[in-house]
Length: 271
DNA sequence: ACTGGCTCCTGAGGGC
DNA sequence: TGCCCTCAGGAGCCAG
Image 1 (spheres, chains in turn orange, brown, green):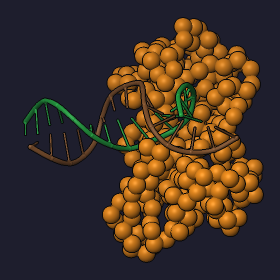
Image 2 (cartoon, rainbow, N blue to C red; image 1 turned 90 degrees about the vertical axis):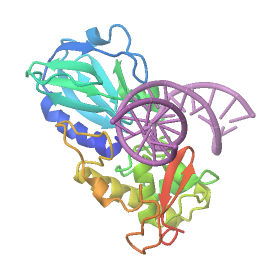
Image 3 (cartoon, rainbow, N blue to C red; image 1 turned 120 degrees about the vertical axis):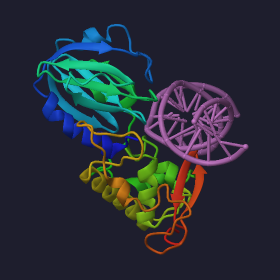
Image 4 (cartoon, protein in one colour; image 1 turned 180 degrees about the vertical axis):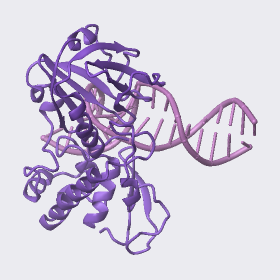
């Protein structure tokens, strides 16, 4: 499932394939994504030249000479620059032909992903305006997390998954980061000490950077722009390891549900 | 201002 | 062998 490292990997893979290319044609095979693709979606993109490929949170921002294509991969989405001679696969919902001869295909079995064409500054769009800082930016530090968490009773795991606080920390990396920080996931965010928040920030940054380095985590669906999986799943310490011995202290990893999401943690290592 | 719950969807996996 | 049921999950949205 794409989290920030997977989106970043896709972004880096797509940039050289898209930048400077002109969009020749757009075909939509399924309009019912997270939000219905409006009439005029195809026309808003056809003929445009791609100027930049960026990422904000888990959104891909494909800037053109006339508007920005904003893509979210949801939990099962992928974008690949395919050879058009390869037949379309099930759930290839949108195809964007480029003047390079390649075809950008958006595949998303669960259709939790989305596509928008934006005018003007993407940062001002309602979906981006209220987002917190990027986890790998200097704005996300211990001072910030400590200040934002004061008075908050919500569990720290749900707190760091709140995109209004910090973007890009999904279910897998939230559990992994809290393990490395040595902080139990159920603790109230507002009860964390300054030292705790420093360790949480450092762990989030370290885990995300490490995952980006190996191309993200592939558990079920995710493939990058070239159709290849990531390898971070081999470095998971707690996620989907319930009952298995902790890699550090051999205590059995525990699992519980927080906010409709599975949380994994080591009661020996995390306090 | 917070917090928790619901919702979209399909494939995987377990049970029988 | 095959069918049916349950569950997972990003994140916007709404109600309390």
